[in-house]
Length: 305
Length: 139
Image 1 (cartoon, rainbow over the protein chains, first blue to last red):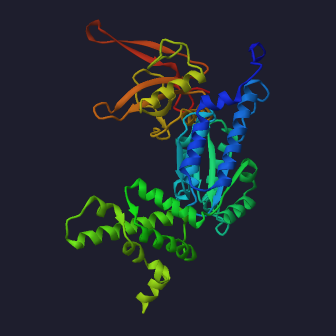
Image 2 (image 1 turned 180 degrees about the vertical axis):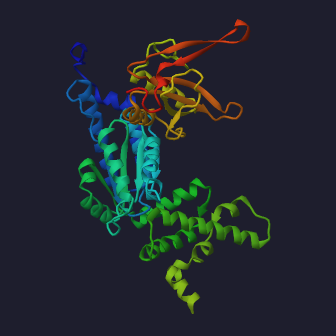
Image 3 (image 1 turned 135 degrees about the vertical axis):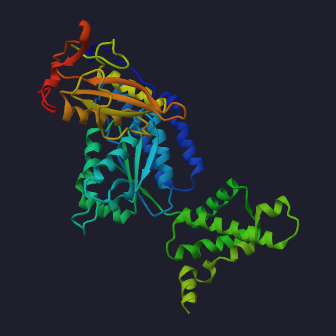
């Protein structure tokens, strides 16, 4: 049968990329995500690989579908989930994923609480993710070496089986901190050998976080005035030095708190408010943060005293 | 005797590719596919055994086919069907139901006539398979 099929002689890769809309997704990735240059580079490379693989398939040069499982490593708030969603889109446009949806889970969604609970739970998630991408955040929690009766091992076995046998139905992306993921892969060689694409997410620089803050504010129809922006530029390195810093997520939380203070300020002023008042975050809203007075820990000390 | 019921009952048995396509149609309609099996071929046997829960919120038929293959592995010589349940208000019922597996050998039915008073006759269909106890009916 296969011998009768006429194979094309030439394939226009450029037209392929145009036609599938992958170029557009990559451009949007460049435009909308601040920084992350090495990640964008890796994704471009991966996309190129996939386009070429597809062309090879069309010319009858390979029959094996490529292994697409990936691992995203990096600190919290560096855009792993966002990039995973874009990745799902790219895979869908290139025809490597039929539906292109992303199912994002953590250990709690996969591992059960009693014997016999884990397998159906994991299978249900796997079934939901079929035809798309299964994104497992903080994947290393699946493996708990200190407890030999931990049910996580069962979930791992099911995942490994699906990753091997249903490669054209499901793409698995594991995500988490770099060092803990490295340890996880060491103790689970099955995962390491089934994952070919490792992408490392660097931390954002202070300037990049400032741009991210401006973008977030713009999306929500807020803005800094000049003093507030200067104050926030001070805020970023201070926050970075403190505990539980989570890059863009910390910025988002800071913005949420500034909005709260803004609301309180204009509410208690009891004057008529203008459109400008409702939009502008002022220096006082930024400076009121605990971060300037030594952060969370300093706050706790005060309470204890 | 080939037992038929449900959607596509007048067609030859569906191939796996056709089953996948039909399941995908069900999912695209927002219906929840469920897999059921039985070893009692009688047409009035409405409630079959559930193979796991009906599958809500799936996007792709591959998940259902995975379960179907698991069910075939365990009950490959029984009747298996796929039901598609529509949970939208006002429907709340099975919208589509079709058979996806059957025993290799189907012995069929015997017609029983029972004579009643005044020479009236009551008719019953009796599946030969059900002469054996449940679990022993199809090899």
